[in-house]
Length: 392
Image (cartoon, rainbow, N blue to C red; front, side, top):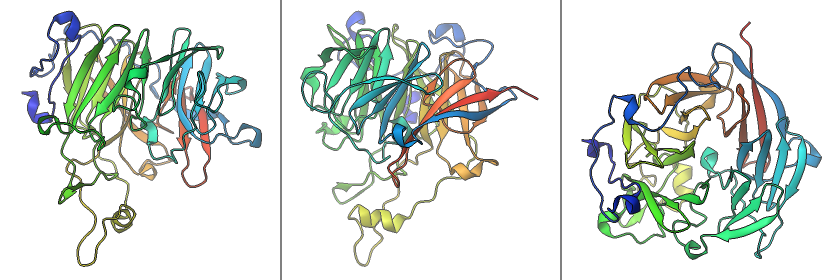
């Protein structure tokens, strides 16, 4: 049974199935690929290294007139890269070669205006408050979700009734926009959410459509370590990750034991077991963390060990239907720099390992991907393009 992996419940397309409000257990993923409506390119991902090596070919943010303060998400569509500079309340539109094309957005709380957000790099690679679908750009500023045309014209505000709730608060890591639906997470380690004891630490992923909401899946996370009644959510605690691409969702609780896949247009949710490479984990100063969190006290160890170790720090799906996973690691562990990734074919569950110079945040033309980084020490943010060099 899947329950031992920590999956609490699954509910997909409840309205269509007439099963709204009922959670049911699942069995393990079927070994028959045809049973899963999450297609992957049979020949493999066109963004795999494939014997070649990725190299940096362009960057935006290093020059004085291109300074970025905080990148809250990027998305590539039709040879353009959309970059959300959350601190400056603007969306930059760059060419595929990272040359400026236009920008839109301004600070404020009125229609079409965005609230400034400074994250200082705390959300890491999971932070994505921007998505593009069709001719629409969806932008979340930590309070409201607003839709713009790709030329920057304000269209409408969505999900106004959810503002301030756990489904639309500054605590969520990312949003996805799929046609008429907005997908957001809620619950989990959101300590401001007063969940009933039976649902405590339950993490939901929900598609909010024009007429109804559909809970796509739910994960039961490990309880946070606590001293007395005070929980501690440290950087080593596993936390959920997810992405949506091509009508398919992939999600994990961050422990690296399994990956959930769920097509948006079907009631089937399956679990794929994972096998991660042995990587050198990052080193944390536990005493300093305890001091910063106000947990250090005389005569006792302040830091609390995680109840579930964080083995994954990133998840993104490429256009060929492959989920890229970033094992939590010390980046200097890879000879020559870069990071080790695991790529999962969502149609079959087949896994391959690869090494790339940075974890992808968006995919361009085949053999091209983009990364983003926020340096919490210097305040510098950077968007970088990488191209795969041909095999010698």
